[in-house]
Length: 157
Image (cartoon, rainbow, N blue to C red):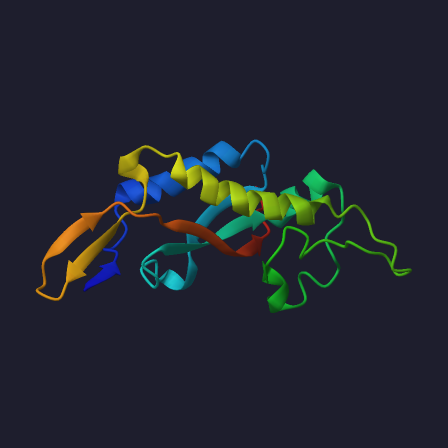
């Protein structure tokens, strides 16, 4: 019986994520970085969780939707699960503004994972297999890159 596992991410695997995000930057200029979710990139053998770091001012400018007034008041506003999270997507009359940011986020998540499949082999995340005897073999299996959440920051450039 084999157990699937991953070693610590290599510099090339990290660069692979950088390459993916750079390729998506033109369509998402508000993305300024990423980090591993919970600083535990090996939690699951076939999935790598990342959090995307977004400049909320550039996000607001891009979608032409103001930042909600509660963004700076509450810490929970600093992390979200959609590009729309810190934006004022509805007014006091419950009239919704443009919600294209929801669709864009769904497509962004799919693009990150799909792009990983097309990276050169040395930049992809790899898994390894160990049998009951302790023998280890490299296994170029499928590893998903999952965008777990978004960290919103105000970048004062």
